[in-house]
Image (cartoon, rainbow, N blue to C red; front, top):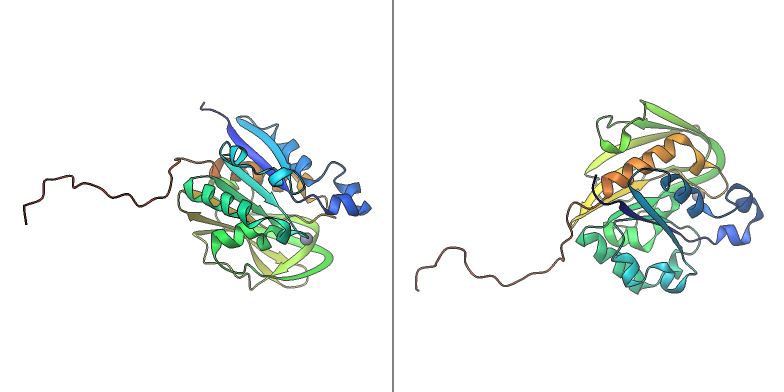
Length: 244
Ligand code: ZN
């Protein structure tokens, strides 16, 4: 067993401060619910950070000791400084895993990493969602059946403006008729990126067993295999070149 995966669960943590209904579901914040579950997994060393921490809790020394960054944001994406988003982006290119949850499709970090608007259709009606596992052999879906359901969710519908994923892991169907690419993976530089749709601040989705299993699986999958700065060095030839 190698060294533990250093996980940082980042939460905007604004809804929790202003909406009583959100505090009822996540009394200590969404980050605490996610970190509480991941902290019980073997081989994970889990910390949390929030938007209102100095440097949003993402100072250079914090990011440089993070293997997998899990991101939840919704109402304050624009308050994340460009400097911090750029720092996290660089770290992804060097090898850090990034897991963007639910409304984090609109976060600065995911949009920088993917290079598209990541916009979606949406509706908040508390309808049912069925997530189809279309990659049963992928490490992210280990222990997940053919599908699982969430009884009350906010709907996200296509078109989801993202680059074609390297692999599509989940497709969602919603009671209202839409479908959505709910689990997508990409590689950027040396980093692995997973977008996972389930979430929302007023539904207890980060207590759901399947959702949390996927998150734990994805954290293991996204852990770096290599750390390497992205640079363009001048190099000497391996074989001697003929004099010209
Ligand atoms: Zn939502």
